[in-house]
Length: 374
Image 1: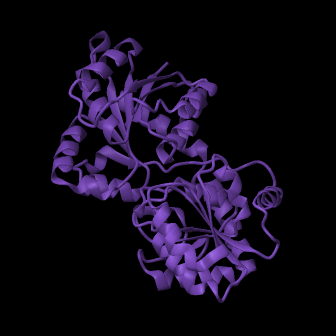
Image 2: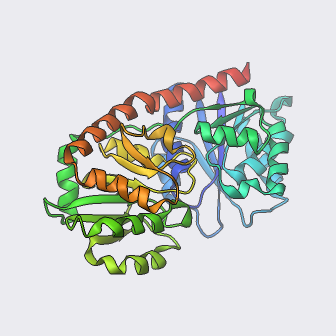
């Protein structure tokens, strides 16, 4: 049985972590001994992530990492990996790439080095810094195979980080849609939020950080709110931008609701009528798949990987990044046409099932392991 140890730094549950929650049990069901060793801040062992993998029968262990630059981390990781004797070390995100790839490079269980696979989950601007470009160029030389979660991230890895085109391939995230009837879920979610039947909800779910472009969403919504008094903007999530966003939203009064962090955010999705995501960049956007699972049309910015996920004019409407009038126009189109919302939402659900199925993601990842071991 092929043994793969996944390494990732975790401080909460976001896109990469939720990706692993689905991928790893699927790999184990296909006969791959998938394990996780995750790094975490000393005061935050991320018990929720640990528990969800343990409950899925995925072997999981953890190691604190006190600071970003820790010269002893390579040695500690190598010591932790040695008894596991992995055939493959599979890293996710920057800290795991730095320390996990380096540890695998010096590890020799049974006299041979494990193969290295690195999944790249984002195209953040900070990765363009000269120091990180140089670091990643070295790490790519020590990596046997790369997986990009989108074509946009793959291009970034080749053009900015120095990966060879034949070294990295795209495997999109997958998501299993809920089995229950979507109208039943919608009624329950709307009742839970106390929504009136005539309220049309534009929803957002995610971290309240500048990358997500919520200042643009609020400005766009403000420009059309008077023409659509039944429209509401619901913002689910927490982050450092919340106070500033609440100040910006004050003139809109009850038309904007901040719901805070919710561990049932995916279950709230069916309460919405439109999902908005005006990100400035986005490596993939797993939440877009959650919106499609809830049969929601998407209004989003045409940046990074978003056009790969949202079919413009079919499953949603895209606007240029930072373009408040364009985003407002797209929102207004959907707010005024319930039939179009339903049509696009159903097409989105179909697109999820055909293009972003968990089985496709798991099978293609397993195929990468087979090739890298050959």
